[in-house]
Image (cartoon, rainbow, N blue to C red; front, side, top):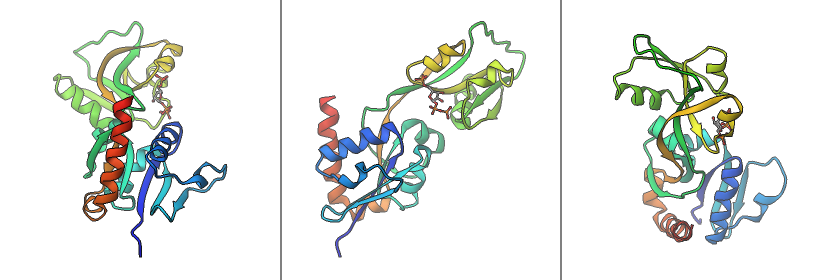
Length: 211
Ligand code: PRP
């Protein structure tokens, strides 16, 4: 029986761009473009199966071997530190990890700083290295609301175009990590399916080089 390669793609615009790169690399799966609510698509001939997962879950699928490879943001890799191989920077989905606050925010170092974020580990590491005591407030979305409503002093979040901050009267205080999408692989999957994974990696690398 032919081995099938399982690929976890992040649901959404980034995932569509990633799939387009796989398609250009010769690993097409036309049924993925049908407008259905299906989550799994297979091209039996090429031995590849794609599935859409929540972007923040891609690394879990890959770490546990449910997917052999996948594409995850560097933000997720830094936050959760999954035990996977990071094979390639795809140089798409570019954004930054940043601290942001209200336009007139001034830090009072005598007080514990309240930081709202979806990335508690990244936030703790950032402030620990600066010797700043913080109280982390874990949120799952719409982080920008927190300083506006007085839930936090600042936020640590992804900034892409800056529009969300601007439209909510917030500004960047420090952009501290550049983020982009990474091709990741399960460690044993990489050993057993090395040929197809290496082919995909080098074809994607060829595209990245042209960006
Ligand atoms: C992300 C991030 C910011 C926004 C930044 O949110 O948390 O809110 O995108 O993008 P911008 O700089 O281009 O405005 P996401 O869309 O993932 O939604 P969320 O509120 O659920 O985190």
